[in-house]
Image (tube, rainbow, N blue to C red; front, side, top):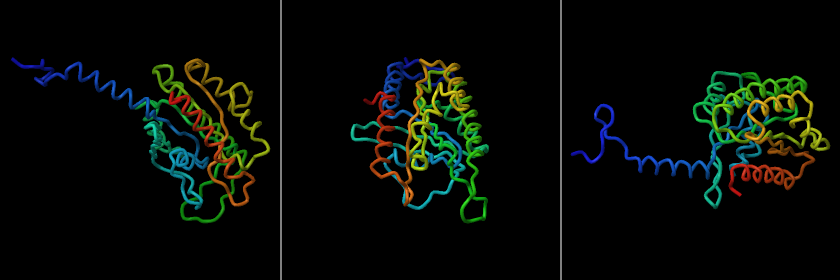
Length: 253
């Protein structure tokens, strides 16, 4: 007699104890290394921010704005805990929509870092051109809001059907460009602020359930220009505060 019952087409069924063991291992790994979607429009500094969070900051060379593929990073600490980052392309292309489907539908992430830059996103050069790119800040703010509307819709559609994601951090980056107004700018991206962005956040929390989806808004900075008024230690303090909050949200501390 067969030791294990056979499933469809005579295939041997997997013992229940083995299935439960796999589930426990998967759950433990998920707790130690939760997945994080990093979203936002092109030029806000998503990849550079994640490189810092993953402990692999890039060189001083200015990064090229825009990536056509989803980037993956992993952060590990000495306690064998960390995060698995999924950086979603910012361009409105098929690859971006496919990446959004992956992180919010196919393999839902545990948390979201949505990156904004107060209208200071780096402009993308047209193919075959060099030199500085003129960027209209009001246009960039409008694009930020449009980008967030698309992302918020994806988060809401998943949050009402699945247990993830459970937290969202809106990261207001490039604070060295508006250092005297950081608190005011952070408030403008916060729930209850009465701004267009804040109103979208309020709508998301109403749809997803405020108790189910934790929302934070934190300032950050990755790259410091030579004449930046922000000192490296201040930059590092912003990043450390973001890392600490992510650790709390993930249950690492």
